[in-house]
Figure 1 (cartoon, rainbow, N blue to C red):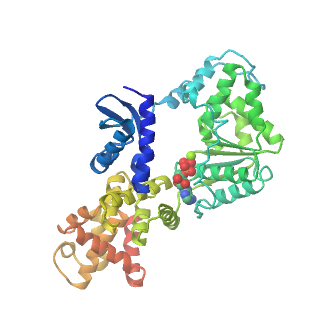
Figure 2 (cartoon, helix red, strand yellow):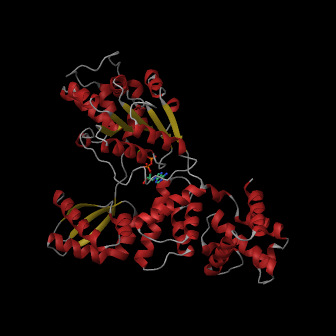
Figure 3 (spheres, rainbow, N blue to C red):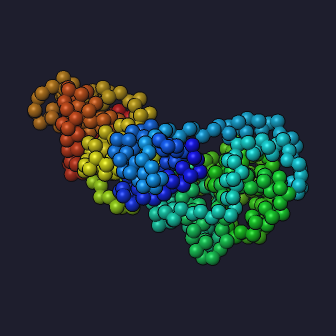
Amino acid sequence: MKESSAREAWRAALGELQLQLPKATFETWLKQTEGIGYDEKNFVVEVPTAFAIAMLERRMYQAIQKTVEKVTGQPLDIQFQVKAAPGLGLARSEATVGESSPRPQGEWAEEGQEVSEALLQELSGTAPSGAADGATAQTFNPKYNFASFVEGPSNRLAFSAAQAVADAPGQRYNPLFLYSGVGLGKTHLLHAIGQACASKGRSVLYVSAEQFTNDFISAIRTGTTEEFRDRYRSVQVLLIDDVQFISGKEQTQEGFFHTFNDLHNAGHQIVLASDRPPRALALLADRLRSRFEWGLIADIQPPDLETRMAILSAKADELGTRIDESVIELIAKRVQKNVRELEGSLNRVVAFADLMNTPITLESTSRMLDDLTSDTARHSIDPERIIEEVSHQYKVSVDEILGKSKRKMVAQARQVAMYLLMYELGMGTTDVGRLLGGRDHSTASHGAGKINGELNEDAQLRQKVLSIKEAIFT
Ligand code: ADP
Ligand code: MG
């Protein structure tokens, strides 16, 4: 098996495929794949999920095979395999923190100092040292800028603070500490600050806390802590992502404490992002914690429905696809936890429609989302409960709702049930149809869509649906 050449060959193939395939298709299914080896017969490609493999095999096999043949000059079979899960390095190193040896007090670890057991432990959770070039590699994602960040009540404070910092670094909110759950825009904002500052000629350094740790430890190993210190001390804006990574890593915190003080004293800006607020960062030295709390702490909460819809519309524009408002709403209602998932769902819906060469409809979207959302809290609400409540509000019996009656009130009750099951509970159209007296999926999707459309115009209907929702969800 040739490994390094497989990687290069695959890169070249990806370059070609990117030109051949629709953008969304490429981004969703191919971007995160890697060529890991080949021999006379097979070319092996690693893919993040089994689902993606199925898509690649079913829909793109020929294109991929032809392209690989062109690149390697050999008619190879393509073998896809699921990428091995990442190791549990972080958990392991955190577990051993309690045993670490005492750190040097108040000063930087001495140059050339023996690499202590504690340091090795801190290193054990990090990427291989080849990745420790964060201090030199300045890689901002051009898409992560202020203009592409959709503002809403859930992120307003963090967004405004980030802009203020970018306008006048080192003057207000120093440090700025951002925290939120995953996928809510922290890294996006850090990159936005970084790019804004860099474009005004400031020296900017963006690193993950993991890179910082690697860098620090390898500086101690190689006796280059002076260079390390100079490199960090010389920047005007230091952005550190995923700060939670250094909790429990005492040596790294020591290094960070001094870096922090140097920069802060010089009036340089520091921005930190973490998945928790400082006070919830276990195993963080108190004096470092209090430094983090000096400036402004801003959280980002999961976006509300309106913001989620605005984000989806913006992303759809970015993908160059026109998507119906009702589809946007369906995705926004079904995917609530974080923006990354929201984006991922949209990408899949778009890619699927591209591949199948079908329009994006409420129904296809709903089916697509079924595969993605399996464990939401909504599943704890019983579908029968919804039907009962609809029956109660409309004063028609459950049997009538499930039956064949075309009476206006009954028909509307049935459609409201379809709507609620689909939009609120996240059920797929097939299941909804089956549950409501064995109807087919297109009837369910039509009924739900009809109510969704009428809600805007019909105040009485809106009121009814609201009462039902209140009864169910409270
Ligand atoms: P975090 O660092 O908090 O885990 P990211 O910054 O990586 O989250 O955001 C995940 C994805 O969601 C990114 O693609 C980002 O552009 C997008 N995103 C998050 N919040 C917003 C927002 N308010 N507007 C536009 N895109 C957003
Ligand atoms: Mg992040």
